[in-house]
Length: 367
Image (tube, rainbow, N blue to C red; front, side, top):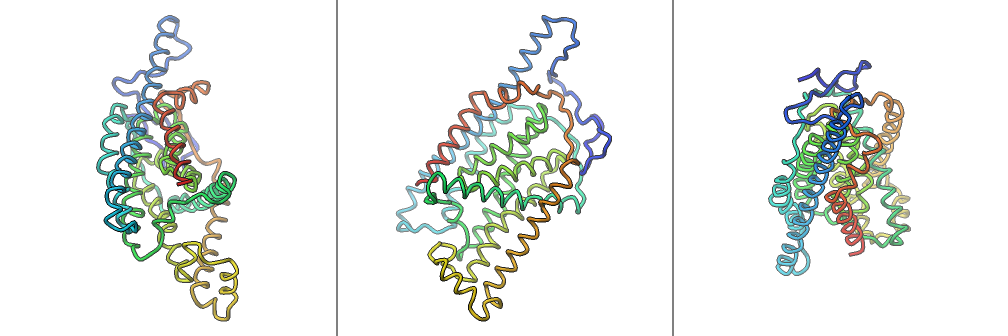
């Protein structure tokens, strides 16, 4: 094993990170005097990289197909039992159960055909962790705004946000279990550990961006894509620099807790009608202007909004200050700039995954 990956933030002196492993075919160098052999090795190396990305894309495609197929089957079968008013916990169980128990395990049969590269694990200091977490807030809210604006452009604001179906209500325990605890563990394990560990040999930035794109499309929700993509970039960087999943899982849990439990709870303390959109803007303004409003739900919600605004501003400042301290290191089989897009996204498996998830995102937006 070579010298270790630097902790965060990385030291100024760049250190080697990877060591070619058994069975690995490194990218040939231009200095090879045997030109025929050089060309043959180059083709073999590129075809191997191309095939591996295609295998990953195919595995994700199979996962999406099985997951959605079982969702439709179970939803159609169980909906009449609840008279068309299925509880939130049943919806979450129908959605998560087939994914965790069937779709992902079957897709992993293909993923494991792409070998992972070993890296040494390194800890994050507490201060570094909170800095990265705070940087998530402006990324998250900018992404949410982009999704909202694109919805307005494409649907005139009529597009449905499926995330609202699991926010708030009396079944907060189900949201806590499925959205705040299980989803971050499974999603970080799949999109950070499994994908990045197997693809980072072709470039750290390449693996991080690919992981973030596939993670964003995995949600099949226009409102979630942009902020999931942005958070995926930050989570991917943290995992790449530490090779420890615990940090991204904890960040993911905090983000989901804020958006799916804390925010809906505070909004419902003001008036539950705000969550389902049945309260008019005039009613909301009148409620806020009533004497004593600052002592009730509106006051707590306003304080919460101020805290989020402060975190967002702090995150923007940190992103500006820390942008030059983010370190990326040469991978053992780094893809040349001219081959990256073609190799990563121009293969059958990834193309089908992109087309499938984009199509399902559009379909679910209008359903």
